[in-house]
Length: 616
Image (tube, rainbow, N blue to C red; front, top):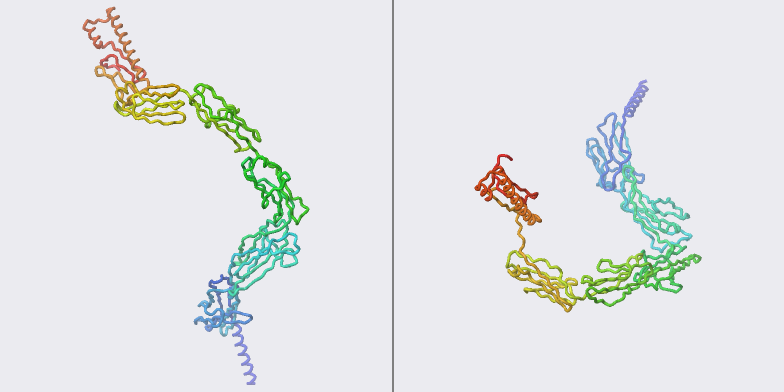
């Protein structure tokens, strides 16, 4: 009985111990994924709970390479963190007090599965895994064309269009092809007309370089197509980004179907212009071209026919013909009917320079021919004198002398003009222009006088009195200036300018006067101390106003004398001889006041002295 009892007791104890152990629990939590850029720092957190609590807990971090686990770092509770030697992370990994695994200078090869394992003595062992994802943006894709010659339309096998390469990306990116901004389906079957051949290279750095070749059987519609490739890659946070390459076009050969022959000159063609005609087809490459003018062979170059400084004889029908051996049935020709505008030289009659006497008349006729409706004008300077081809000048004067221009133009062809000039010389006795008055500050000053005269032959000048003389030509007149002293005789009699030639003489006297002084103050005339007369010499017509005022005053005085005489005659004005004397001397009785005012303030004149009055 004792043995049986002991055995049962031992079994019970074992079961109790196992129950205690099994009732303990370890829970580990990590981030499912940790994302980091190449070269940066990655932090892999690890937390745990132990029930019941244990004081002998160890946290270990493992990586799994090719199906084999390898510890990289560990730390016991309350102890120091240590990293293991001989691992891919040696020297770059640490474990913190919170058991977070820190990896510096992350490389693409660090993209592994990490395990955080917690051992808690009697509580047991637990672990959790996290994936480290490493990202790196690839370089801008480079798109290159093949070194082969142009692609021909109609070939039965696909031709290489270009190669797109994007280097150093992680994780592995992908290439997308575009034609005219539209994405092309990704096709790898080489039996298709359009397909791609991709390739991938994993660099020693762990980054990926990808490449894709595009093959097509292009048609004529692709002659202007633009090709481009884009690299698409992943970045942290589920971001999808792209980088675009530069664009390329293809050199595509295709047969010609029609030809175009065009005149490149945009304006009307006129004599003297350079003319360029261009012949081209809608094929590639351009074939050889032949040119004819009125069925006669002429030489062009590279589809261009250039005529330099054309004449009217260059007008005619030009034809261009091309031959494309890839399409011999096509009619590749075009024609241009070239019209060259012209205007003949101006025909002037008489053409010789004309010489006429004063008062005579002269006439010219001007004609021309042109390829279109034209005009004929006679001009002197910018002034139009005639528009019918005839220029007739009556009663010739000196100002009619000079050059006249006959101008022909074709209004419908800008720049198409012709012109001819004639000259007219007018002969006759000299004529002096009205001279200007010479002014000096005071007698004895030096004065310069100017005398201008027309005449042919050129007149000779004589000054009386003479001085320092200079002669010049201004247009069709002669000008003489003289500088001399303004003596009393000069101020009185003036200076005589005399001109003469073989046809006669003319003379004029040039007046020399003092410069008029300007006085801003008004003069006043005072009689018995009371101002009643003002003058304003500055006003125009002031002198004549003064004369009128004097005349009015005289008339009023006569009227006043008559009035006094009449009153005295009627005995209504008792005054003695003494009073008469007073009146004659300018004094009047206080009862009789005579006052005159003009409309202009500066022409008022006081006639009699008025005694002060208390009434205003």
